[in-house]
Amino acid sequence: GAGVSQSPSNKVTEKGKDVELRCDPISGHTALYWYRQSLGQGLEFLIYFQGNSAPDKSGLPSDRFSAERTGGSVSTLTIQRTQQEDSAVYLCASSLAPSSQPQHFGDGTRLSIL
Amino acid sequence: AQSVTQLDSHVSVSEGTPVLLRCNYSSSYSPSLFWYVQHPNKGLQLLLKYTSAATLVKGINGFEAEFKKSETSFHLTKPSAHMSDAAEYFCVVSDTPTGGFKTIFGAGTRLFVKA
Image (cartoon, rainbow over the protein chains, first blue to last red):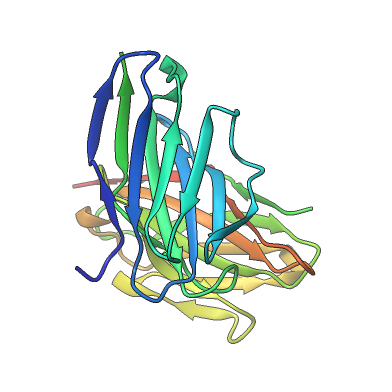
């Protein structure tokens, strides 16, 4: 499709397990962003990629969180040893270029940690 | 430092009446400003953007916003609310400080539309 695609749409896992969330951006978009949206709250910036590099990792909440992007396209966000407070909707967005371009969002992955 | 303040966490209007969602920002640079809408269980969709061109910006679905530098405001308006406008709205500021990138999302305003 033409939009940002995220998978899975829903993920339920047990505390302590690792999870991988995938984002497939719009073709040609060089910038890719990950956000976390907790229930009833705004968006929390996690990490941003320009091409395959991540100039800004300041939002990652702990060293259990990591992300990579390969080939300037697909990105994965990995959460190791999940905790209940990791439960949230994880949103991915992409844009042609950072900052002045609008971001195009996927529908998110709803992560529930039991 | 950048910041975005959405002055109302909830706004309730009757269908057919005007909508006003307020946003104030602070930025050390010349910012780009955006409004996004989020419907339940969906990602965010761009409504409109300001990038130092016309100060009155028209967006989709009849929404518009006016950039007022003297008031550091970027309020979102619509003349007549529709039931389908009920959603969460986010004001966003984005800068390009030298060598860096930063986008800040407001906390959101939930719009309720009564029949």
